[in-house]
Structures are given as C-alpha cells and as structure tokens.
Image 1: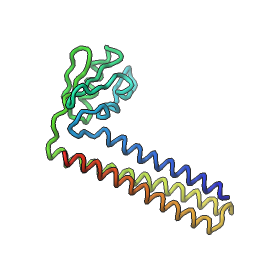
Image 2: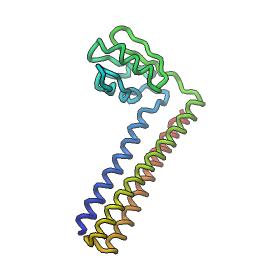
Image 3: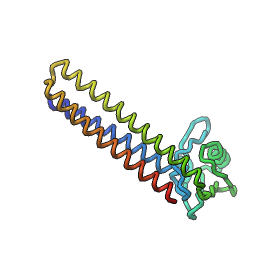
Length: 188
C-alpha cells in the first residue's frame, strides 16, 4: 500500500512545515531594535473576559522607524490594550494620547542582543523537538502498516529512510533560520 506511505509522508511533511512556519512567526516577534507590527500583534489582551490577540482588536502601524502606533477599533479598549502590553514580556514603555497607544522602541543593548540570541537558540531547539515528535508519530504509523501486513518490510525501511531525509532537511532549515535571525540581532 504505497498510497498509505505517501499519505503519511505527505501529512508528516506538512506538519513539519507548519512547525518551521510557527518558528518563523515567533522570530518576527523578537525585538531587533526596529519597530515592527510583529512585535505586538500576538500580545494577548483580556477583552471582556476572553484572551484575544492584539491584531484582532486594533490597527498596528509603524509611523517612524522606532515607533509603533496601536489604534483600537473600540476606543473603550485603549486602557486594557495598554495594560496587556505593559504586562507582556516586551519590556516596552507605553504612552497613549486617548486615541492610540504608542510604543517607543529603544536601541538594543549588547546584553539584550546576547539574551535574545539565546532565546533564538532555545526556540530552534524547541522546533527540532517538535520535528522529532512528528517523526516518531510517522514511524509508529509505518510500523502499524507493516504489522497489519499492509506494507512489506522493505517498504517500511524505505519509508523510514525517506522520513530521516525529511527530518534532516527540516532540522537544517530550522538551524538556517535561527542562524540568520541570530546574526541579524547580533550585527545591529
């Protein structure tokens, strides 16, 4: 049943790709000394008892290189948005003019760059752990197919080898993205 192997392989490939994409999304939120909407769009805001990502509650713009402006769709949510940012791990000072929240992005210190580089390395390792988990799930599925005599031992070995190639490819991609982001942060 080569179709079962192809299906499992395709599902695993897609799941691994999503892991890499999630890591990339996280990297966009890491502060590099430049203002970017990505820094705050995932901040969770307690809006009427429900945690909602900031990007769903406000327009986030960058009017200047070191400034983020957050204009809530509902003006009454200004204070709770400001509070959510202050409580987040962004360590940014907020200011509001009654219509919008402003965040001034300070230049990064060398210590902060090193700390962020460690965070990036940790995130890359977390992604690799997720990738290994997805590999393990696929291996279990291949084993079940062989146990049920739906695939031969040779097909199982070939599928395992292709899976190893896949995880090596995605692990290398995680390392590459992490290295690029680390370099970006340390060189600024």
